[in-house]
Image (cartoon, rainbow, N blue to C red; front, side, top):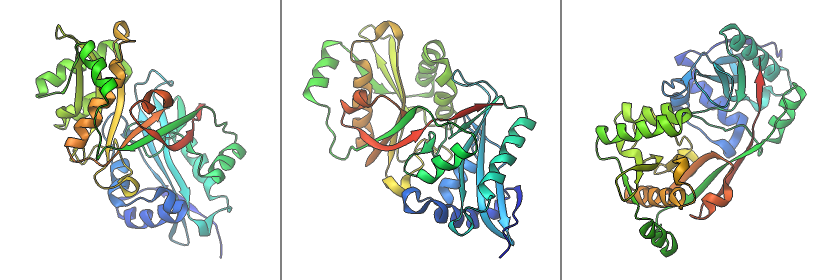
Length: 322
């Protein structure tokens, strides 16, 4: 069989075959489906989907590369591109298809003015970097001149029986904190004002749920005088279908929830507000019917461990400037 591949841009009609190729490339460790892939392929939130690449051999999809563009970031040069996922079917591996896809993506991003490329997505995302449970992927990118760096983690715990511990409850009471989800779009906008002041890099990530009607997924911490001192973004099991904060329902269950972007005002740190936010969010998500809850892309293992979250997946970060 000839393994001369032809690389073209993704078309909507490719989706069923793309799902087959994905699951052949990654197997059960990263099982996906059409719903999950469509969220990434059509992303229009904080990070926008770009053109995706499909490699075909004798008319059959042999590999894929899904892209994303971020126009504002305090962490990487901007505009920056992301290779949110890339895979080659097992029957087509070690034939140069991955190399050709990667080279085409670099040329594409350079052509549209990207200043850097990150391996792994932002929001929504499948991976926060190169998954370390795919050692072949790590080896491949090293051979192509990419240097995997800092490790990031996804944390998970079941909240089906979650209760705020006595210790955390006592701290909340002592600090006279109020921790409640936004009750209206107007209240959510107050939280966005806080976000713009304290964590401008997260503003778009918090704004999108409000835009699509999920304002109740913003958790707000207030001091005894009513001032907002912290925020957290939740992903409820009934979240808007275009949101992709927790894409791994194939692995974590259809009732999976998520916690993201935990932020406390700089002047208020050291009071236990961050842990209180995570604990209260876990309780709210349990009340909303969540099972497993994912906290993605973090290095704060000790912090989330205080609420019982444990490492689920590990990724090696990798960014290349163009």
